[in-house]
Length: 592
Image 1 (cartoon, rainbow, N blue to C red):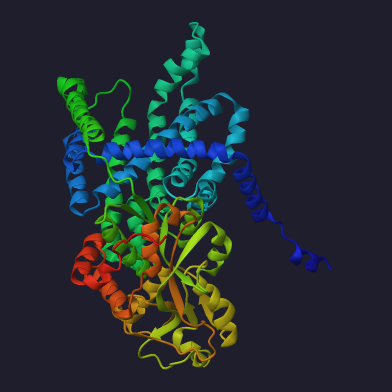
Image 2: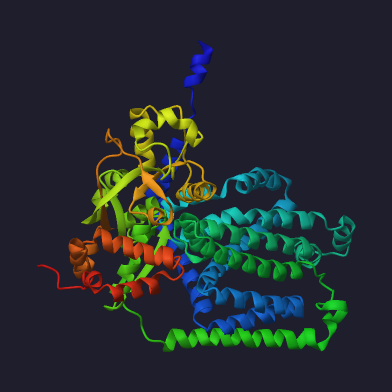
């Protein structure tokens, strides 16, 4: 009896957390809006500072910063590293990520150091903080993003808040450790000479603990950078967006460029902050005791300050003297890994910007985009499959979004194998499972294709004996690519249209029982009041139709021939060669 009771016993912790988040949204929405506005505003200012001046101005600043911090070797390395970032066309992304790191790290340090001081001076506070910090340091990084997407919607704000929590622990721990390591006899001597606790803290303990505290600051910055990359999944942009995009497309070149840019940024930040942590308060700043020289005391700081003044001055001129941008801004969410939506979103950007709009594309997971549409943080999603794939999202957000209808009606969910596989139909798969290593390689757990495969395809075709590996689009494509290169048989969940059909020699298994459903249609969606604000664009979307030839040609050119390296320019070039396609995006006066 007892085992049966235990088998059915379950603590509904997840439900409690979900209810708590719902209560916070209902009760503290005003507070979250204020936090969101503040963080978004500061981040926008930082990005403007980093992106308004020409790239060479900030490369000069970073080079001089390396020279001031550690010497000519770090200066040379900084110059070469940031020039490499620029030459790989990752400058804007790197500066966006740097803005996030600066903001999140600064807040984490401003909160963490006082908490560390408090913990060092109170055993009770230290005991309370210890398990909280353990929790923050061991919680998987991806989990931080879930509640903050709900509380702050998509974009940079949930990334900042999640990064602060993820990175704050070293600031607290290192500060507490540094203060506790200060020689007790020194502290007692200070008290003996009549120093107040405040003076002991600021004039004895903190200066002597400076090296350890700066080590904590260094770790905060490193953790912030790692989290910023992960936050690319929720629309935070920057290098993280390119890393996620490269992962979903198995794009080695884009992944290598974005990844190398992250490494360069991390090494620069680590060397600069690490060099400051390694210096004693009374030690020289240069090599071989040159810190007391005129070069280190005057020339280096003056040169660095002059370069910073140039950068800030250029930003001010750009802010006050630049021309105003378009007031017709459209934010399009681009679902990671949905390549037909990627190319169509870029086509929208090219066409609308030629007609006076400012179009911003933001990569994110499809669930995150639907949340953003419902809350007004995105204006459009160009690619949602109905009636099956995104049914759950439409059921959830249907009264908060607009459906502009289908622009393509021949999409389909598939189970694909290598073309020389010994089977042609799903009803042959169970008997030949061993030839495919008894595995079906799937994609994301939340995808409609995964749900249909698990709930319909597997039971209808008796495939329960096969191991359905739910992974991600990137993992599936990576496994498919590996099997093609090694000549192994493989079975994967896929969909059409997809560039994999052009890249790999594969075929769809027949579905005589119709378990995968019929043809799907690619719809475009907008936030609830999009038509009211943009009637001409809404009218165009309602009439947009894309043929097989156009879609396959555009995908193949942009994603295969050009490897997705410059999506906007490559899409523009293709559209110039296909005027019939481009003509469909011409705006007309909306129907009254």
